[in-house]
Image 1: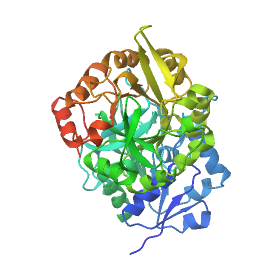
Image 2: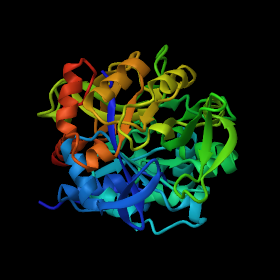
Image 3: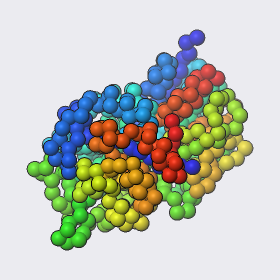
Image 4: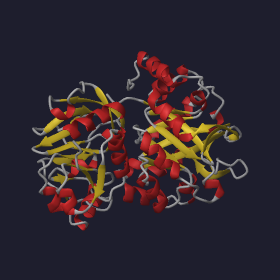
Length: 202
Length: 258
């Protein structure tokens, strides 16, 4: 069955990577910032890189906040896209200290990672421990995924998978139709492809 | 646990992968896309593509190969070479590169690092540093325009000071290329990397000198770098990436197994 899959054009830079990863799975995708197209999709992706402040400003400029909040189909946020799904982020620009209100699709807050002597950004392949759930079906504890971030969502009731880097944090979160992954499945080799396939099959 | 990264570097000149010794006498190794694909399948954790002609020719060369790589590669990759403006960087990232690395243009205009940080985020800003040990002065000095030997020149920066400066300006990662070691396969410059590690709070990637598998174990254990970059040992099939990662795993260095 051909699905109508839309990548929400947030104006951020990793849209091509997500599109290419889905195309490698043989999935047809549309990249769009048109509310009607997004609302009519079977599944949606919310990609994002950069800072929460810039990304939220871009989504607001495109008039997409209400559209995304009204989605009822399975929607996957990737990296910053996942963080934007929460209520609020500490990730401001260099010149501001006010927290950034996010899309509030899943409760929770994005905080600067506290990793002691370790380096930030947390960059590279780290092991993920998923709870039992369809998004991670067939993906073992200890599977490596590719991460690049300095802010994270703590482990809490909506955590779907955990990871550790100086502290435990949410590698994936979930509520209702909304899923978010902190890592980049589109850059995580076979494991990432497996997860994307699971999402497409939801 | 976060794995240490093995990063093949592909020097690109006129759309082909090349490799020189001590930055000179470039020979053609092969086409970009099939080589990139081969490394990804062999277990490389990340790839770096250096367009070594770009900065020194004062032009931005044809970068359409970036998109062709992004279509077939499912691991992260970084593009370097001739990125002088926010717009240059934006084009490369939009084609699907995960990170951009800047070297000579950052030396010419350090403010560029901050601007890139503010627009695209720290996570995609890599600073490449070509560092040369000057035996006469006993100092590590930063060089620029190293892609073209006729234009290669020393800057006024000592390496340690430049490492501190680029972090202040928003660099997300530093690749330290130790020029004295480049292409000669006698081991990474552990002494220098160790000293720079002390000053470096962002991920640090060692470059220049890999010849044998134990060189990788040494640099991870002794200099605590986050990744090790190498070119000729992989291009010339002196070291197999899969065997290298198994060896390092047995040496208790955290590795992603494929």
